[in-house]
Length: 411
Ligand SMILES: Nc1ncnc2c1ncn2[C@@H]1O[C@H](COP(=O)(O)OP(=O)(O)OP(=O)(O)O)[C@@H](O)[C@H]1O
Ligand SMILES: [Mg+2]
Image (cartoon, rainbow, N blue to C red):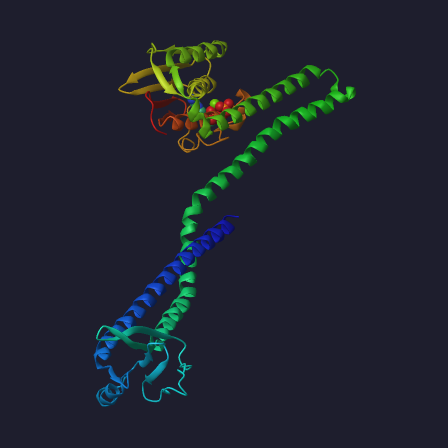
């Protein structure tokens, strides 16, 4: 798929470059032709200016016979010179050696050249028009030059197309790399999500089968219902996390920013999770929270507090202690959640923010984790141009530190 995108990009690029090349070549060709014809015209103007004074009146008609005799010996005449009387009837024609002259009073058309350039001028004597002089010159050398120019343009075109195509294909490889990475991540994400959803569904199916058969069920009905309840809890938890993650990563969430009362929000999360902490005999030590407003996405900030504190409780042993500190320094909000729980091994610490990653899958399953909590924290922090760090020592505890800008920033 990525290869076909690269080929399409390269083809588009080649088409664009060739289009520009064609436009540029046509424009250059036209400019070249105009300047060539202009130089021909200048030559004709000079020649007319040279010939005009030599026109004599013989028998009341203009003639160049004398001039022609004289000019023949001096230099070859490159143009065809034609003299017309006042009525426009051709009288004389002189031209380069071998060019036919007037024939039965009609001008011959030079058929050996594809094009001729001509210039016309009045012959005036004593303020009276006595006839007309016309110069014609073959533009064959100019036509040949234009043809050669065109030929070069055509010969060079396939090489340019091939060169541009190869370069575009190579460079598009770099351009599509992020797309390739995103597609790979997306494929992994879908596969992992499918796997995570499959497990509770399979549990529920197995429980239903047992419920259908009274012989198999025996006196296990309570256990079966408990298993179904846990599986459906897991499904709910997973689908909620997937929705939250999608919402936080949605660029539209930018639009839903507002002034979030940090103290109120943090205290509501702590109060809710305090019940679970008490059940597990874990002490929550909370430093006084400053009454500040943060411009941000309410749900994202709530998820940061919720996931970090929930993890700290979940991954602590009975009798453990979780310290929560929220401080305002400069224009930033600093959140610290530290526990003295199980800790994270050094070789896992770089993966804990990956989706569906759990250090100890069996423990997470017992405590009901799907491995999306810290991905949500990371996405939420990045959405606010903040950062999150973690320090941990297995058996001693873990500390998460989050820094979030309080004011509006361009993300
Ligand atoms: N405070 C902590 N102490 C020890 N390990 C932790 C802590 N926080 C996270 N972890 C480890 O990092 C893993 C990923 O955490 P995350 O919050 O993403 O997933 P989860 O807690 O397993 O599931 P979920 O949050 O989706 O319910 C956890 O499974 C756990 O192994
Ligand atoms: Mg978690």
